[in-house]
Length: 328
Image 1 (cartoon, rainbow, N blue to C red):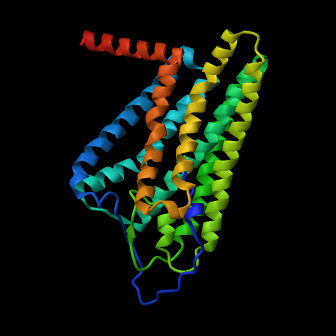
Image 2: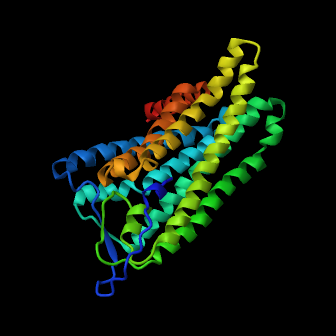
Image 3: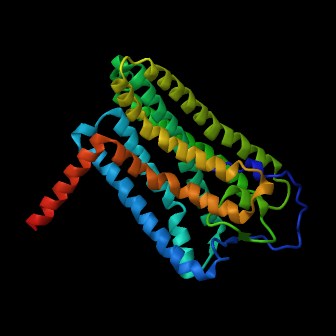
């Protein structure tokens, strides 16, 4: 999820009737580092493969292992699948640009990439809030946990998160790409991000910028505040537990999710909420890359290394694969 509103200064751009309408863009990406193109290609390819394999493994074991059929792992499976979709909106295009040096992207392809990137980003914010609510019910109301978080409710929460992100981003993407684009067609980024696209638009973009601001508040700040509220209640309940052992066990069940939340929202805030005068577009690009890959890379590591049930299920899967390979 992107928070571009602090970088958007309202500016009325005069019509440029004498310029040809732009039908494609050029994603500059890392063109300012020509000597590192193949190194970056190899590095990002390895990272992309790690993200696909690790999150795919988490998704697989939570679906196959009978011990991982609780609501928490149902949400974890959806979150891992969402992470795969999220990185797949940017990494393939970035790898292709680095490998072929053909940085052109059509208007339709750019709009499609932007739509899916922000759809998955918005859905991820909502799903993280849902996972925080799940931990809140499990710790603060454990006797009614399975009653409150039954299978039907879990499905409704996941579908609601996806449906909200999909429907809202259709309107935003349509509104942005209804603007006329003329003049420069170079995007100083590795994907079609909203602030860079609006800079290339002709005419007044104030309404578009305000819409981005409103949606950013709704999809980022509201879920983040709900998560903070859930964890403040969780911490207050944990501190009232009679023994240190009980407190440690309760903390361990929600610490993994809290770490993912901090990584996701924290990196986004660092990337997009700093004043525009303190960093250049190049720094924005590097921070956006950091923000884009951070959570998908660390999500499976955090859940697998800190969760005993996931580690047991992973050992079972590896043993099953070994037995199959041995029989062949």
